[in-house]
Image (cartoon, rainbow, N blue to C red):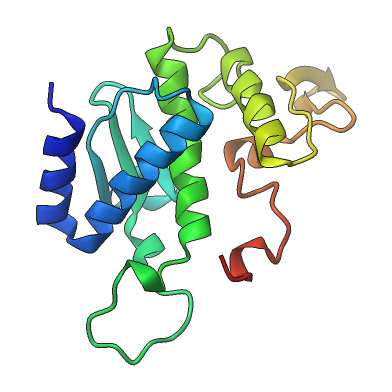
Length: 182
C-alpha cells in the first residue's frame, strides 16, 4: 500500500500542479468531513466509465477518477499554460467530496441496497455532510412502487430524487455558488 506522500508524488509526476492541488484538497476534505479516516488511494484526471459522470470511485482499486473536463478553466485565459488557479476549485472540490463519500461507505463495510447512491449508508453520509456544509436538505432512500403498472420511484416530500442524490453536493448548491469568488 502506498503512502499519501508517495501517491501525491506520483500525481505530481502525472498531472503537475493539478495532481498536487487535488491531493492537498483530498487531505483537507478528509480531515473536515471524515475525521481523517478515509484511506488515501490514487487520484487521477481522465475519462470516467462511459464518460458520463464528473467523478468515479473504484472500490476495487481505491481509486478516484476526476473527469478531465473539470480541468477546463472557469474563466477564459490567455495563458498558454494554465494552472490550478484557473480551475473552478469549488466544483472540483465538490466532485472530489462526492467520490470521497463513496470511498467512506466502501471503507466502512460497503453498502447494501439498490445502488451506490440509493442506500442507507450513502444517504446517511449525505445528510451528515449536508448539515456540515449548511445545506438544508434531507435525503432519504428512495423506495419504488408500482403505479398504473409501471415501477416508479417514490420520493418522499422534501427528499432528493435519484439525480440529486447521485450528484450531491453539487446538485444542492445555489446556482451562483460555483461562480462566486472563493
